[in-house]
Image (cartoon, rainbow, N blue to C red; front, side):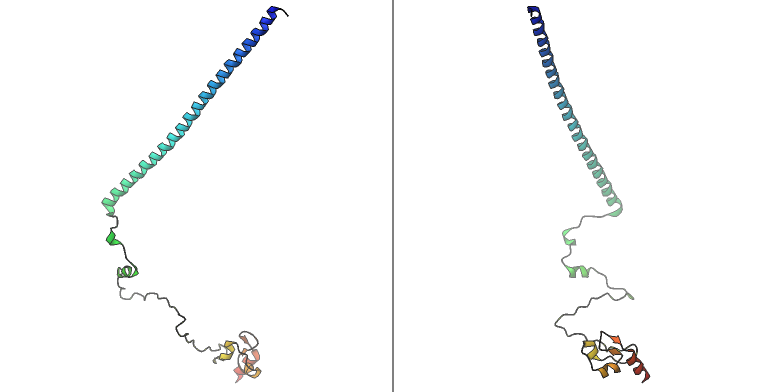
Length: 172
């Protein structure tokens, strides 16, 4: 190889290195500008959110001012004071008005404490015969066969009606 071809080859390498260096500088510059654009976009989004927040705050305060003016003119409401709070149920009940004439009685709830005596229930009557039902059948004790046949209810199951016993007791 001649000296001229060597210089040409070295010249090409130098031009290639210079182009590569310029490309790297351009690439770094583009990345820097891209980073600035992303930062500016994020700032724009943050400012838009802040603007939306301020608009909402402004509308809320305008609504509050409108409500306050309506309250002053139309309603006349005011914030409760300490003496307006109630101390308990009795004080709340004292605020009520007495019932008017002809008003229905208030609904009352009943309770049965264990210390109270059990309430007495009326005697059960058979709807078929009209006679009182034997207490032994209700409490679950089994009467004799003759007693079971004389009553309208059978002792074999819970409150079963013996048709034969009903027919016999109805014929009497």
